[in-house]
Length: 451
Image (cartoon, rainbow, N blue to C red; front, side, top):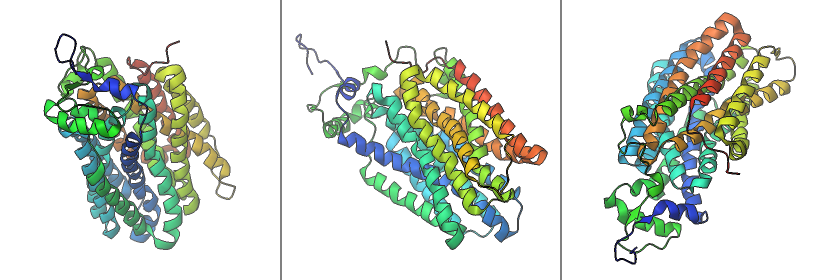
């Protein structure tokens, strides 16, 4: 583009994306990445479903799987932190494709192990891929979206993780009674490998990421044309909306704590840590808790799906709440409600001789608040950081959050040993209270619409 004075004027791709109506190609890209997120949620919940039959088949105790669960979560911590940095260094596309293929292969291999040591090693390898996916995926969702739709697209993309968790519970209810625990890993891992191969051949790179490097502007031109924009060969392209004077232009961990970002980074890290601890306490251990209480494998599997479905449904409503009130009021309100509900669950009489419907309803509400918060905080993180820091900033925030998931098996088993059902839900309430306070620290929340 050239001005009247004859000087070249850069075309702002951010403005092009913001002003053009949402197109079919953007929908295709979001769906393609979202399928990987579905498999992330599904494959991550397979081991908790397999633990009850494995305890009987291998003759081990419940505590023996705490290490396997924790090691897998530790792999996710490393994968998340490294994956975020890789996403900023090498691109969203290779990080997404590589992570889906890696956790798919590792999950599939779990179907052929015969001892807990091998399963622990494979859970660590799967965790690396599971952790690496979401920072790059969240960045991809944000960077293909108009600014005014970013929270919606990011949330609907991340909500595919609990959708996968919901499908895992249904898969367990169908496969476990007839085909056994190995079938879970065959189906879950195999499906992830297929989706990763489809992404390998069809998924493009993020336009905002391509705009950072002038050498990639040829590929960016082709991508923008595919989206529906008229771009001339050699046209100078930039992304002015993602260039901030108050932030660094290089992705380093220390710069997340520069003056302009330190408050937001501390708040995000603490919020992710607390909510991941809560999420993994409920999602990874609820099937085992219910099985120990005498509930059938079908009820335990459906309970796992209920928790995931609640978080998925909450995310849809959460988008509306954030659109109307902003993320500060919307998410802090959900955290406060979560404290009340989990404290109320300490008084629920778990009795397998009675109908499980009331319990499943209460667990769905718990999943609604805990799972919904975990998903919605991603939209805050994508709003806090610019393109040059987005995947890395999200990666470190979620990575620190996953440290909460790493300690969750030990906290859960200690609570169950010390106080059973009541102590377990008291700890969930404490975690949600910490989430509430941490959200209050964050300065760059998604704002409510201008009146």
